[in-house]
Image 1 (spheres, rainbow, N blue to C red):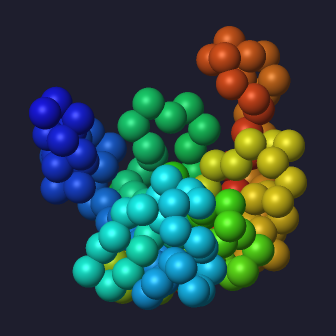
Image 2 (cartoon, one colour):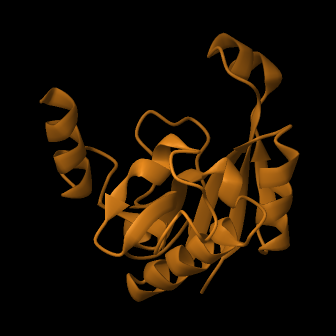
Length: 169
């Protein structure tokens, strides 16, 4: 129950750092004939009203993601800074649905939603050596804003990451 309450609080904007959150889903109508054979992926067994989930992405409005030390720099001045910056997180696509444009379409939908919220700057963290993800973001117009130092990443027990930025104003 604690996890469910935490998720509810996050989506409701009650947790520090989460001003507003939206989880976007990519679905297919029928995994047996379209992209995924049934039960090939655990995510393909998740049925929602409009089909079967093959991808997800969270859009997080705010200055920073909670607990995150690698944070965006734009906008740096003006009113409502926290309402003009958002982060993509938890970008996932089922392996059988990769390289079919699912992530790209999720990111386009997130960009459209962010613009409707008044966001001007989108950010995403990516593991530095995750070439497929990094190349997808760069192809989508993101640029490297910061690189996590190797010693910081090592002290946190994870691979070094990049913070990528997209100006959508």
